[in-house]
Length: 450
Image (cartoon, rainbow, N blue to C red; front, side, top):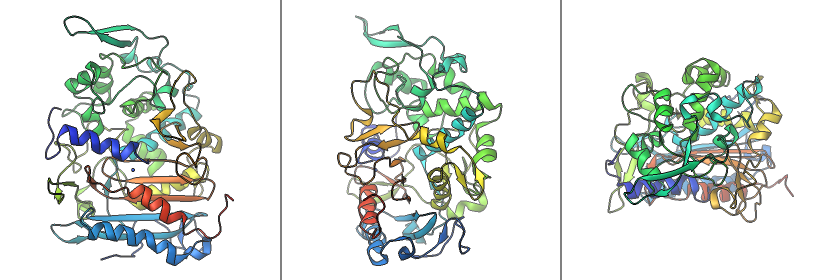
């Protein structure tokens, strides 16, 4: 992929970095989505006071989102928060389509891009629990297309890449912690990044798309022909590694990736609106995607050209391909906070979930993951190690976001899950994650962490 509609490559790089590496980046009250409302049940709607929070203060979250809509920075937003397995906040503001004036509603469908990654990680760890692999296993043990990868060292006199042997084979743990030496091809410039773009697996993977009819097998075959950008375990770099994980799920399970997700995660958790495409009967709930014009106005624009969420893709991208709702992602996140279980359906064991949000940074790394103070990386999640340095609240909070503006976090100390959904990308995208976090925590009147 060499050009982008309405978004230059430079702007795209800034946008994606802002969303995933920054402080990570007419109101309706209809319940909507798949959140249960029966009294006493998991994720029932309750008053904020019932879970130790202040209603008036919590309303500041909605007011802040509405203000961003009024300022023209967002078309609309949906936010949902739960504490103690109860939903105390579920609000939508603005529009899912500015041009038609279609109101944003709580059951709106969103492109979640990199919030697909934690879902893929859970799928892979379900197979880990079945003894299908060890985290220390070499990736090439299961994906021979990535066997004997060499490592980029520079260029010779004629500009060709020079390489060396890897000092060890990339492990699945390194694959899941973005420390395996892979790249995305769009966050920095090097001959390796250029090779990703030329092969159609860099920006295309970030978009959740490949060439027509190409599958995960085609993806790893192309990837296996490009040197690693760095020695495995030597540095953290956001990468296509979760797309490799999606294909690894297929290899280990013998199923298509999407079928595995449906059977093992989406159906058990009643995530009825989460999939790799939007069926025709749900298109009236699918949010328009926006970018910013040179003058700062919101203009309809897909983040990547060629993206079509109305058709089932051949390449089911574990790193960026899913569409979901705030309610569905709340159910997924609450399952994690509950130690792998929701409404009697167990997806993972408690210790497996705990393993996913421990610091998995290789000891050989000179710098911490993400280059953010107080923050490390687990298995497909960022993890807060020091809340003071990270300007957060709870040690052990884990989170991520998506390139189209979606975000979430899980706080095991305060027993909170927060999910936010918007559909905009560009340098003017507001820090909705930071804003919502501050306004959510100032509404807690009965803290558990102090």
